[in-house]
Image (cartoon, rainbow, N blue to C red; front, side, top):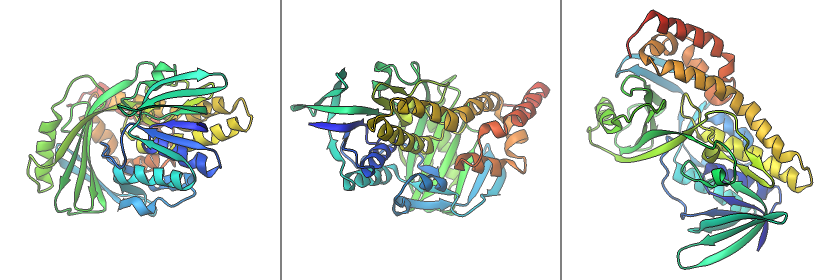
Length: 382
């Protein structure tokens, strides 16, 4: 069987790519080693502005709307900020959200293969041959183009010479906990409990999704101990919740995201924000831009896939280069960063604007780095 495009990985990036291509009339097969829906460690927060990239509504799988953010340092010294605009931040559950995108792809005509592992991918003539197995069974597929969307733990992009050859991996812990939610429209970011990182807490119906990340990767933090301090502040037992460790790839420099008839998207492309660990919005952005480029390439434009790499650099990478620099300064002595950065009256609005895509890190980088750098030179606690 031959398709226009084979998409390896049915997470947010892969499913979004498949949906956009199928809606453009391309024949698509969406392949994943697991059946969906499946749980995926992720905070599930994303700016409502991602809706502009989709011709169908995402609201059916939005679990909650965040219009206020609380920041703390070691559970104290709070900053409370109202987010600007209508529905500025959405909360989704990744099992429902990814499945919803995959279902939209199916409705538009995409084929789906769940529970099939890609064993081998090779370039054959002007297309690709994929060898698949589901354990006892094997099958072979052919496609004109290939999308690599196998996530942070996948290695297909590196085998094909795409993306970051040595991905920057950081350690995270995801916690799903049931319980009463005091403020269903308020998220919480805690910057003092994690050395070289932070915690995030997003409300959902009937509980919370909590994440802990060490973003500079200098040491292995005891994320479980951090959660044990965080949960009582929510009125929950210290040992509550289901905990899942995972590794996240952070953006760590510009890399080629395309080859001959192939692109890499989402976490497999190491697109997560190096300062705030945001991964869902860049996954969806890359899926949209990859589908546009592949559609043009299939129509005969030989430069279209190079245009995808260039566009992702312009729309995402240039901002992330500054985000990485800000993160390197902030997380070395985060108490100084919290006092000189987060507690400034304009900081919450700027964070919201960055998360929504209204502004990039480059728009604020010079001021932030100069301010934080001066604070570091002046001393401070970490």
